[in-house]
Amino acid sequence: MASTRHKTGTRARPINDSKAEAVAELMLEVTQCFFRIRALGQAAGLITNWGGGAFGFIRSLALLGPLTVPQIAQMRPTSRQRMQRLADELAAEGLVEFIDNPKHRRSKLVRLTPKGEAEYRELNTQFLSLSSTVGVALSEADIRNTIEVVRHLSDDVKGRSARLP
Image (cartoon, rainbow, N blue to C red; front, side):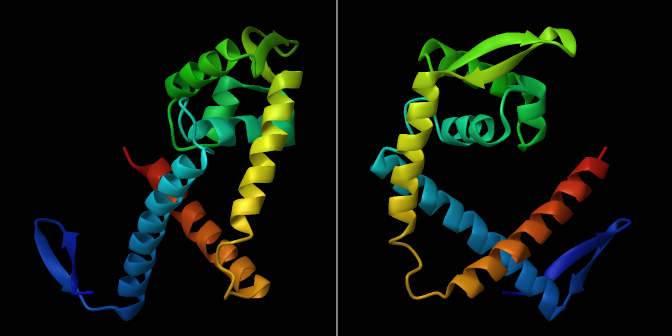
């Protein structure tokens, strides 16, 4: 990767830092991998007409139990409004339902319906089956190490994003 420019004040100065270039290359590879994963998910039917966020949405409910739409939005880099639309779409499909929240009068909890639980189990089985065919040349230790590296970078980026005006 060519040298990067870092803006200080009104002048940009080149950065010739091999670690910075490695991080930049990793971020670009993760982005490219994301788009390939999304295309594979669409081809495999894991990403449905409600979009890629549906599996993650129902997975959160399956693992954590009922949540409010704002809680679900906080777990993702997306808006509360987008998660509300997705919740409404999933409710229309009969996969989730809105129930009273004992901690808040206006903010309902979203929970999986029995149909939603069955859909999650089916999608998760398909996802694990597909996952078992990817990265077969890598060791489990390498994969788990990569998870930690990507998670650390993701947390760092999230923290920086939170500090932006």
